[in-house]
Length: 141
Image (cartoon, rainbow, N blue to C red; front, side):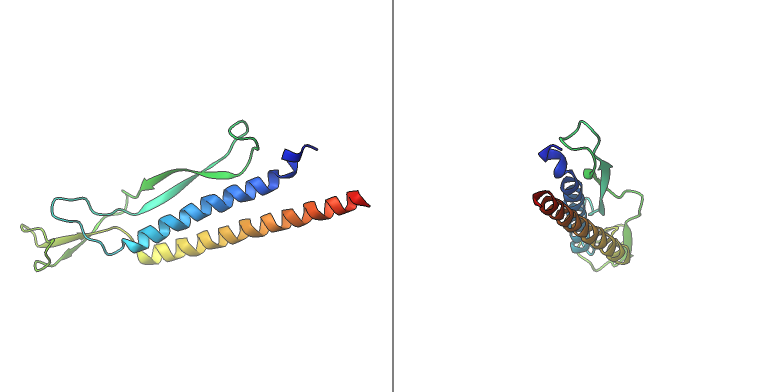
């Protein structure tokens, strides 16, 4: 077996770790911008989400794993509008203030899911390392 083949399991878990880390970073960014308002004439913050894609044979040295293909803004969820004519960023015509479309409950559920997926990849990587170590010990004997 080639040396590269021995580490393929680690590569797959490593790609999962990197993808979930990016997802967690985006969730943190969403949470940080949950209460931001659109400045007059400006664009409001829109929730961002990572789109994962499977790594196929020929794309890298080792097939398998996942990567973040792109980061998309959530345009399907409506922005939140609050009637507050006293707010400095309120629309003079309507008195409405436009907030981001970040839903904190959804972000917390997504964060738990991403954390669990990260932990699972970490556990898989550790298990694979232990299996390779034990295989090498058997070969020494």
